[in-house]
Amino acid sequence: MQNYNDILAEILIDEETLQARIKELGAEISVDYPENSLLLICILRGGVPFLVDLSRYITSLHMVDFMAVSSYGMGKRESGGTVRVAMDLQMDIHHKDVLLVEDIVDSGHTIASVLEILQLRQPRSLKVCALLDKSERREAVVPIHYRGFDIPNKFVFGYGLDLDEYYRNLPFIGVVDLEKYKPTS
Ligand code: IMP
Ligand code: MG
Image (cartoon, rainbow, N blue to C red; front, side):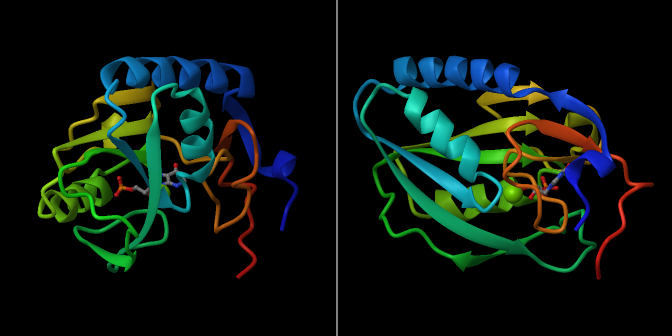
């Protein structure tokens, strides 16, 4: 696997800017959910760093749970219309105030189908917090109640976002130089 520097076109959002914005989101969420009934749901695996940092900036009591979904068909860098629950939540979300925490909303298909699945379980409320919004690419209508950054239509990596499963550990969001990237398989 190549060193990230060899495939980095530019740093889109540096660590300091990311953390400052996530801190603001955490403060906003703390005010909006004062009743200690908040459940953050993280979609594995891309949402993990964001969930962890966001959770530390939220000062009201809250719980966290995880789910994994996989999308049917389509290419590696895009998602199709529906998703399958690959790993379900541990908790019952009925009557809970659920906030879905996602790394990025791209076409919107993933979030749209996850929202549909969760809505059937009748939470008290259901909202979306997305770190990145690639709004130009939107195909499905999805409400984003808390948005970190609106980003251009470029393939990004780092801070949870992967390039063929690598580089999720980087503390910033970078743009991939797809010309220089050589997939190993
Ligand atoms: P959507 O269903 O098209 O909104 O796709 C959402 C999922 O695609 C995200 O949760 C990411 O896993 C992945 N994805 C979309 N854009 C990017 C990107 O620029 N870099 C890395 N992963 C991405
Ligand atoms: Mg994801």
